[in-house]
Amino acid sequence: MTNFANFILFLPPILAALTVHEYAHGWAAWKLGDSTAKQMGRLTLNPLAHLDPIGTILLFLVHFGWAKPVPVNPHNLRHPQRDMVWVSLAGPGANVLLALISGLALRFFIEYDLIPAYGPVYLMLSFTVFINLMLAIFNLVPIPPLDGSKVVAGFLPRSLLGAWEEFEKVGWLVLIGVILLGRFTGFSLFDSTIMPISATLYNLFTGGAPALF
Image 1 (tube, rainbow, N blue to C red):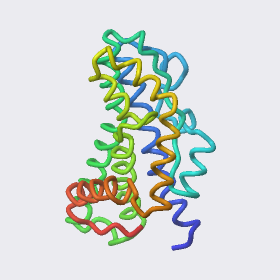
Image 2 (cartoon, rainbow, N blue to C red):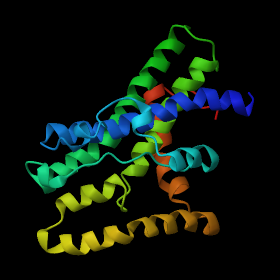
Image 3 (cartoon, one colour):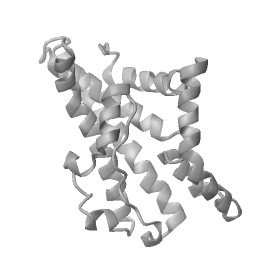
């Protein structure tokens, strides 16, 4: 397939993954007492409300990007430290759920021969499973500003929260350093951890359907 055809096929799964992820954060925060995202019009499944222009472009160019984070005010949550754990897990959790639904749909279509093997629908569903799993696992890495760092903060004793908040200010530099380390040393966080976990779950959800991307 041409690069343009691939772009058309893979754009909807990427937009869906980013949108569902951010919407889930906002929805969880709303249910736990913080309506900031709702008031700012971010509690929506409209992809345009969640896209970060630079992050989206980079996602296609270098396969690493981001969406516009949903605003959450922890002080509005009923139990800020504990509830932020659930808010943070909601994004990756929504991605895993979407991956599971797409994987089961792909298995159903294949089993009953409802779609052409390796056709457009096959590729879109397969990629939907893959991109959602990758996004979920990556965001669970406990390095700020990823969701996993906020999960860690939820379990820290109050005596360590100050130090962790200081770490969060430079966490993005650490994350970039980890990514660059893989580029120059061959030890890649993606290849050693994220990809194997994603591949295992992909095979489980799809019944081992080949991924052609």
